[in-house]
Amino acid sequence: MSESSAERPALPGDIVRLDLRGLKCPLPALHTGRALERAAAGTRIRVECTDPMAVIDIPHLVHTTGHVLEAQETAALPLVFHIRKAGP
Image: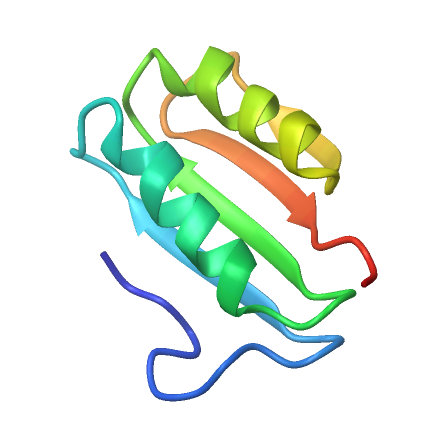
């Protein structure tokens, strides 16, 4: 897994890229949730993964935690989700 801000919390305006390819359920959702917890409001997170369950898990996580799923690309691998962390 690679993250653009591994040493510090993400700041507003940052784009955090999570490379979660090869991880199986529930790890993509867990890593995405952890990144959202560490990020500042307004941070955008791009999640790339290959687990087919992520098509269900990532949008569900985003919806239940109150963040915004701005776009998703699920026609081919890797699956890509563009998420914006909601405000406080």
